[in-house]
Image 1 (cartoon, rainbow, N blue to C red):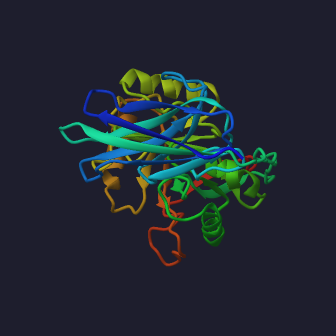
Image 2: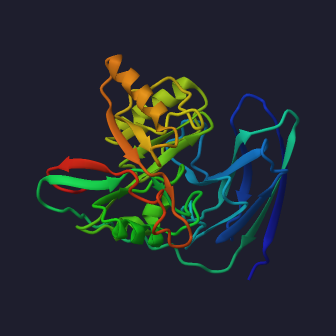
Image 3: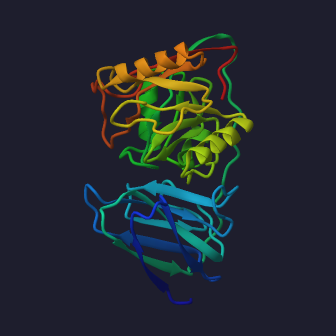
Length: 331
């Protein structure tokens, strides 16, 4: 068996105007897995997010090549032929890959990011991806669900299985799982966990330092490395052209939507407990209605599923719910 190989990279980043830095590295032909660690002087005013792109990733907007994103939730991730860290898709091939650094918050001086990648040549089989079942509950009616929540595939502590159990406990008919800039929780679990009694809606939360928005219906992530108002508008147009819905999330002072307001399909007017600043969301929604925009008002808990049972927590899943009238319950 060939020995493990280690690549070490060091990059200096600063407030240069670009929100993303790509650091290329080579995956050798013999590798079936690599483990990546990164470190920097993290603090309240220094937060650098992490993601990965494979050899298909091009400059923004790339049509493919985004392997995964963990934001600031992980300092170490792995990719293998048969498995990957939550938030990342399994599968490995040789070529030039990219470490994606999201410069979420930086001090006024340059910051050094250290990256270490260890390649493993041990034999591995390719990941098995089971087919998605087509699930639907027949019959028209009002259906109850939550349109915003997270698992440990982004920045929550709890597993998809625990979130599933919480949704059953709360009696939901549908649940949109919207991890930050990744859909791997659906690939790994929710696509096959849907049943006629509980439909899991694929999607993710478009997440940048300037605003968040949910994309409902998508099983793959559109290139989220938008840096200008025009980038964001074009990205939303591409999403909608594919038949997905775009919702502006929690537009209130602590986590506002700072881009020009797009041609959104809906707007999250009730986010988490009502007293957590939702009067700002409602006021901004009302102003848009007064301006002639026709947006559907929705709500979502934004629950970051905890690692332990949270029954009795007033801010758990389904606080609030959104009710939809459907001819049948399906994605």
